[in-house]
Image (tube, rainbow, N blue to C red; front, side):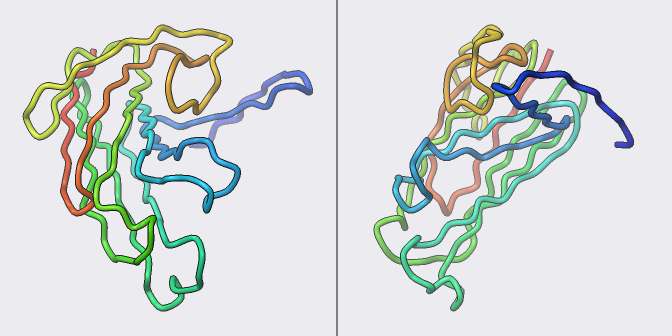
Length: 170
C-alpha cells in the first residue's frame, strides 16, 4: 500500500520487508540454481492477507525451456481471518533430466504469533513453534527468525498432486 517506512541500519545489515500474505518459496542454499537438488522447498508464509507464488523449474543445463520444456508450480495462501489455506497446485508442464523428480519435500514456516493447528488434506500435521531470535537469519530454510515466532511443519507430495494445508491461526 501507499506506506513510507524509514529504517536506520548499519553497513553490515540490509532491511528486508515482506508484506502480509507473502508466500516465499526458497530452495536450499546452493552456489547456483544448477548446483542443487530442488526436490526440497521451504515455503515462508506471512498471514494477514491473501498471497501467491509460482515456482519455475527447468533442466538448468540446456535451452529446452525455449521449446516449452519447463514446469511451474502455483502456491496460493488464502487468509480468512483466523483460518488460512495454503494450496500447492499440481505442477504444469514438464521437462527431462535428473532435476525432473516426481516428489517434493516441503518445509512450511508460518510467521505468526499463534498457529493452533495444521492439517494436510484433512490429516493433522505436527507443528513446531520456534520462538523469535534477534540473531536468526531472515529467509532461513529452518530454525528461528528475527521477525517473530515461526511455526514449522513438513510434508511430502508428488509434483502432480494438489496439496491443501488448512491452518487455524490464533
